[in-house]
Length: 470
Image (cartoon, rainbow, N blue to C red; front, side, top):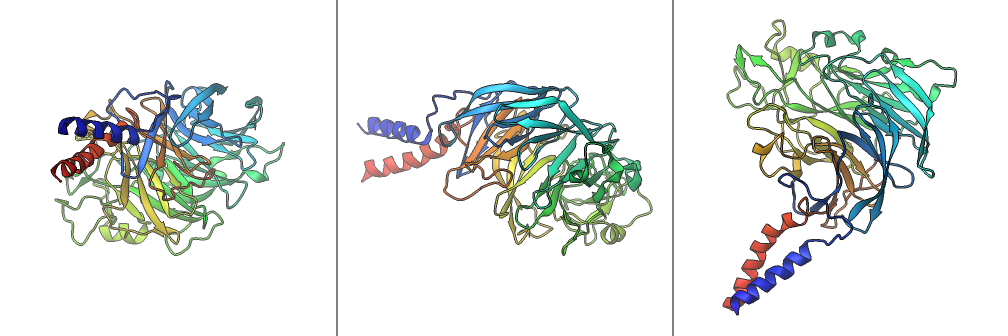
């Protein structure tokens, strides 16, 4: 009798926890990610080649840039919570050159996307689900380089008509990035609102510099409250210190502040400042760091091939990160919630580190336009969605890239290596609402609800045992 009661209780609680979603039975083919308490998620779409950036159009359809394929449109069936599935899908534009950047005008009538060389625009009609390929216009050009070939796009909402573009380096440690006019490893802004039908494209070097000395800042975001511009930086892979190899845990990846899109710097950093690459890098792991002196996490130090700089020069002459993250975790996107109390960051994960690191989505708390954690914090990024066993990575786990909020407080995100799109949402009643369309949310099957079961089984087992003993 006791065993039957316990089994029945467990079945009841499992049924209560796992949100049923008959319209979506998709499962991941690898060990499913684990959502933090108060969050759930669900796999929404699969079968893409390499989905990178995504956004929602004026009618709530999901627009995805699939690298090497083009721009896709998904009409979603929404049954509430995380129970979201694809009702229809279509290719808006077939273009193998598009590789990452994607943006939508505030009126929803123009789509922007980038290749290695150019930024383009097209006329878009969300009502008819059509993108006019004949309307293509080149807005920015002269961005070709090897190695880091993505060109992240951000349309400012605080300063309409301003397009921000991030361009990475030509190699891991690129000496050419020391010269501003080479255009490498920089974030620039462009007044595309000033262009008319007869205007020639901007050369990348014509943009106003928001920051340089940035190896590969793939994620760029605008604080929706104060207009501050932030980026997440992928730092160098190989570095030495006093002849010792320190690349396993250093240098750290970064969260950087670039002032405001209107040109003011605020109290930290400076618009157009140099952030150090390829000369100075941010310290992450202080353990066994050669000749550490008084350096702490977040302080900058010169790379091993730099003989003319000191720790003090790196600190005085270059802009330090606002926060530093573990080395090689590869942050690729950053999105604020609508009241700018948190920024969410996707960590794509290391590609050759042993053991692997990253492969998660995390949040960073903000207040008054700045992170609440000190610049030397090592725990500012709080896990939201993680990989259960990093030993499976990178070949058999999710690798998050782009993120976008929908109008129901749900976050949708891509996993490029697995060709998937997920939905992620809060279940604890607190706000996670986003700023790009409105707000954020999601659920768990094999990519979802079953992940909550082990925690609940333990809790229920304890309760049932207590009842039987009473």
